[in-house]
Length: 102
Image (cartoon, rainbow, N blue to C red; front, top):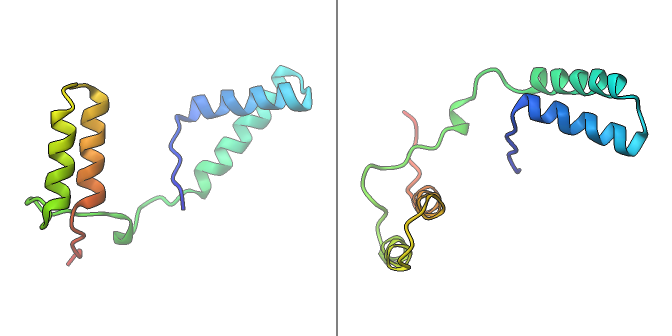
């Protein structure tokens, strides 16, 4: 299941704009419907996450050469940017070890 995170205000504006463009609603009506949709979405979301939703990774890097090779490749590309940092964090997140919550 994919996860989508968007600011509530941005979501309301996006939904309202779609209602105006596609359904030709009046802007005030579209804004009211969009606010209702976002309110319902917010109430449908879990108020507290269960421990199944948390992912705890070890302080130590994963075993094996896959992670080390992927990090070395990213670091030798020569460009240091926020995109590289995000890609490195994604490597840590996706290749890190899953630990049980006890």
